[in-house]
Length: 398
Image (tube, rainbow, N blue to C red):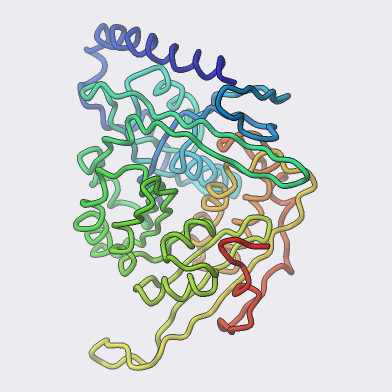
């Protein structure tokens, strides 16, 4: 593993210099700041502001090696385009094509000035993802790299990551094509904590401007390596929903039980919280006010409802790395076209379950893959009772 990773990073440095010289030769064909999609792929209904990484996928390991030690894996170590923004966009675009939609997905991001930027463009070629990007040539930044470890033993699968943010560390509001972004009906922010240079503008100008144009907005936080979890709560009142895994929910709310975390989100102004809970499926918690006065002020206590969709049984789990991003793509697809939370949970869980049978977070799925995990009787609905099973899902479950 160590030798393979070392070779990748050494190769990155060499390739960066080579591609820099090659691109200078092509300067008549490529502008200094390129902010355009390579192909127009139909009208976009969803735009994603999101992260792109090159994933080094290390699967099939029983444990991460201690310092000075080595571990073997029987699975080939793969190099695959990834990142929450790209993964969700690819799933979303694939679903739109599979269900006969003519629309495409806008993906606004920043790619590095290296060979990995070419790999990303090649990955989206021929898909419904309309990549709208700024190239990192002017800043001399390289594509971020995420080393993804997945595996486990005795049937307990887990994952861990080591991330070099690269281009994502400099991704900011000047890299966005706001005119294109304002042509969609829904914008999803994928990987909020992976692009800190964008936080201030997202909170103060970008999201409020989208809401002024009646564009719905959702967000996925990703993990905050600083453990401070700041900034995002300021966006809650402007979001139509926040979508995350249970660990992120516990950290954002500083709560130890899922039910308490959901109620904390609503007390901070969030209308809808979507939380994936691994093999248990996913839950949507919706806070609604009734009997508002003519002045628009809320007159009655909020009504909170939980919709819990259990995941179908997966016979063999290969890699859990991309399950959350896959769920997000499925949920975005259905919710954006129908506003049906129940159906969106069903589609999201099916796509997430299908993804864990593949290696790599950006693996391709077929419609048959997804249909195999559709479940028509896996949904339960509750009015947030204190004795709910969700109250017993905790930060350290037994």
